Image (cartoon, rainbow, N blue to C red):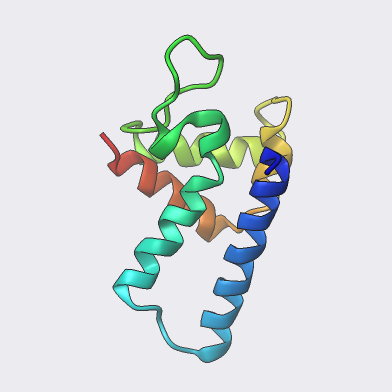
Length: 111
C-alpha cells in the first residue's frame, strides 16, 4: 500500500475509534488505549521509524526518548506555522491537541 494511503487509512481508523469512544461516553479499556496509542504512533513510522527510532543517516530526527515537552512544543509549532517544514505543518493540523500530547508522551517514553 502507498505510504500516504496507509497513513490516511490509519488516520480514518483512529478518528472512527475516537468518535465511537466519545459517543459511548465510556473510557476505553487499558488494552484499547494502548492499541490506540500504538496506532497513532504508527502514522509517524514512515518518516521517523518504528516507535520513533529513525534510520541513522536519514534526514528525519529520532523521536524516541526526546523530552515530552520538547516534542509537544515542536508539534504545536509545526501546527501553528511558527516552525517551518515541508510537510509537518500539514500533518499536525490533522491531529487534535490531545492527540499531539499523547504522541509526545508516547515517543518520550520510548528508549
